[in-house]
Length: 386
Ligand SMILES: [Zn+2]
Ligand SMILES: [Zn+2]
Image (cartoon, rainbow, N blue to C red):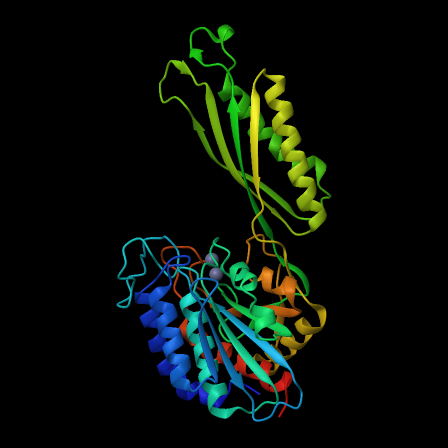
């Protein structure tokens, strides 16, 4: 089966919704216009229930099938938030909000799940219940976690959850997925190094924090190169280095370092935190200073369930003829919290040969809509056959 005919008919409508969302990007939990628009459309489609304000600005819609002999409840999730990037696509529906942009394609994700909801509410050709989940704040805010904390899974009795992300570099109309660990855990750290500031011409009277911090940045690279199992992925990146002086002739009293740690297993995540803390203390002590380390746990590793991944890949193959094995991704994904609570799978849908996500020239490819919507609809109709 290629794409569903109904989505060829709805393609123009869904594209228009997508471009409207694109012109009005909203960041993190501030998806007020987007959430209101989603809720309004779900009601207009005839969803059985629509609830707003889950996980602050999240929206949940319920669509009951023709029958409910199976008692099954499947959750389908899309993200709605944009990024703080100045758009440079030059398209006529470009962002009207300076400094905000749909640079990760969540406009496309929202529009595709709306399209699927419209179809499912029209046809109801399944035995069970679908819960469509629209979450804010995927880009670092933990909107998925907040929806889970608001009782998303229990309140709607969700038994399985599915998610989708567009992927530049994968051909339009095709898919890629992998079972097990897929997207990385994303932790952050800050280190405040304290020494003894003074005159740059009298280093012997100081405890030089810049030399200490320079050694520390290099020493932190040994976590990945010397402590980690080489076949278990780990990234440690220092991304900010600020001294307390801007002068040419002052040895600064303090240096503030920031960075991120990406891992694909709980063991590696624990090891990285332990080694980072120990190395900071050790390097600071070596040079006579102190290190105050703050380590912040971000999104957990996103793990696809075996059975649901095989099913999701099978559905993808029925639409596009094949489904590629996706590589491990060292970026994070807030859907990880939903997959920690319920079995499910997260798939990549091709965005074609476009700029990468989070780039100012990136744009969601509207040609991906029929395949993406068909995958959502087929997940429901095949998992809960009427
Ligand atoms: Zn993103
Ligand atoms: Zn994204």
